[in-house]
Length: 256
Image (cartoon, rainbow, N blue to C red; front, side, top):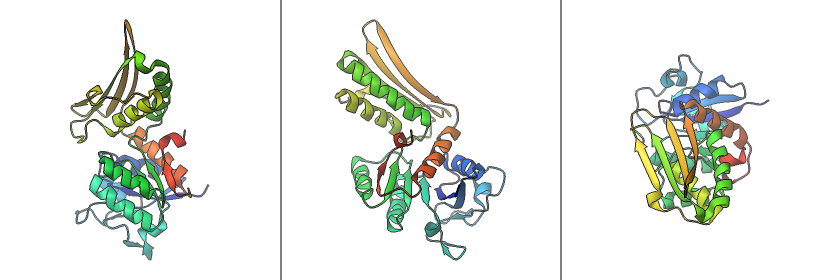
């Protein structure tokens, strides 16, 4: 099988370092480069060393997607850009991805409604996957929520709880909002803002629970992640899926 050539953002980041690890271990993926913030002292160093995985990958950290590697701009040599960084950086990268017609997987969360709408419009001109959560089980959870929401409708009081580490900035999480959107579309009931409850404590990787509360009984659907590598594996599967895709907006559910 021909390898998928990828560029990964934020190799020192919470997600980026795991994506570097998983991608470097796969025979069907090749890391062209990783992208770090401009001016950092690790620019030009090997991505594996910067990510702390304990070995070299042969791919350098760059601070500009148009940096020359092996005689060509790095972005020209890749098939897919995998981005779990910051809102500001993601919005910059998506413009370059569109310019070079590269598939773009955006796992960054916290975008405003206007920013999301803008990105969705760009999908008409490029292959774009917006994935607040790249875990396969979370996306299976969405399918279970569709069934439960259609069946229960207004019969249940719905609450959504998300738990993350104390460093996570956005609350509710992007995943919690996506779960709410799934429930709303399936049930026809808009989830009220007060139904979202966010916990930020210690180094909790990620937990999401949806409660369907009825009189005398309740249904809970919960996903726990034990570490960040499950999301990295999903992101890499998404990169394989996105290679050579036509312009359009894609979701993790498409892989399922």
